[in-house]
Image 1 (cartoon, helix red, strand yellow):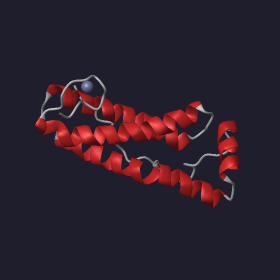
Image 2: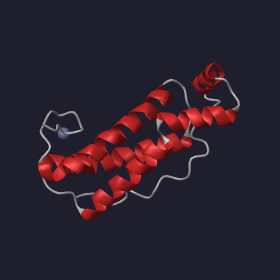
Image 3: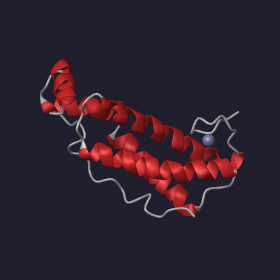
Image 4: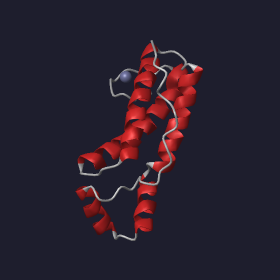
Length: 135
Ligand SMILES: [Zn+2]
């Protein structure tokens, strides 16, 4: 029914469904940031988010693959980081940043590709997660 968010094709156990869903949400938000960076965007905050998210996703993947309930700290970190991602790295957040920049969508796109426009410049720091590594 519910496949592991990492794309391996395994089924997620019932006990890890909720964390699997958080992982999928984060993967989507991170993939968008990575795609923008590949297009030329320079964004220190975006970079931080992707690094924190990748570290956390490794922990989530291990949990889903083990078919166990997530450790409390893993679940807490996943909730914190996915909600941070939704608030600050969603399509809506980009639209808002473009509007505040005073640039047209076309100008913002070109500036972003030149590395001159960072839609995440005013995003608050990434929550401290992913620092505790699983064994
Ligand atoms: Zn997997």
